[in-house]
Length: 365
Image 1 (tube, rainbow, N blue to C red):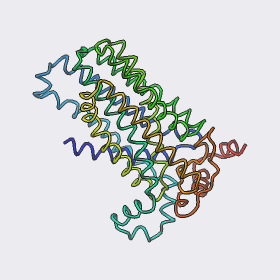
Image 2 (cartoon, rainbow, N blue to C red):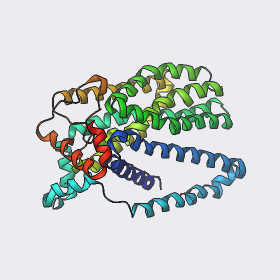
Image 3 (cartoon, helix red, strand yellow):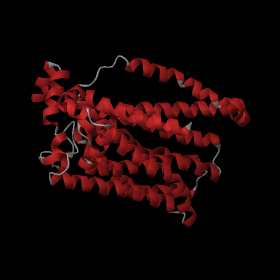
Image 4 (cartoon, one colour):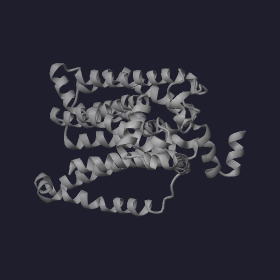
């Protein structure tokens, strides 16, 4: 069951974020894709509340005996709405244009050939995406999820852990759109770079604070509910847009799906086990792991920027500017096969088909 749920979630993430990236107006593109994080945070918070109420009313024995079926039954409602709603959603202009440009050549290719072509032609995009997604994965599962078990083992009461988690989820919900606004104004690449850099710098001090008194709800709220959650929200709000933006339209959904899920499964899946082992070696272990995860994302993004400045990697395949914002480099021309995702042509088609006349005139001004 968990395997099927993982496949469903992974496929859904890639499809939904790709579609939002292609239909959202470019001025609010990051905020549009941040809606994924908003709804995910709301879903996680609702799931936590349902689990807490079920355990309070049915008891642990009742939940294990039959109550665990209730959440699965409740998911029929949002799942049914999603299935019915997407039947009436039109294809994006980006997708239709890319499909016309492909012609018969790609439609006659097999799925294996297209995946092989993706790895051969866009391996830098895949590596950069996996590297940055790995930071998000470690902070989501090795930090946010694992620390809840750590607090329980340390002796924090279920009610206090619920408060800490509720604060964290509220942070995810409330700050997603403001963080999206920052990316829309100062550039997606710049804000993601600042986010992973901040994780590298602050994760160890936050862990020292949390481990100083892991049963204290105030310490838990400050360290996890606010501290770690702030950076997790920065990454969670922008990681989908970042991953989708890394690939041109002809391989966008496949590229994002493969790179994102490799990063999440490899790093997110192993992070809780690895953090547990490191904690046994040194009490500073988890904080060191989180800082190294931030450093990995930071170095990977700088590597992608270096390739971008060399004209060898196009990272902004939907909205070229702003991307690096104050750092500059948005005007560097990408040449060769990596320029196939150049947004100059696709964006003009997109704007003409989705923006009103007044919006177009305003954007020219």
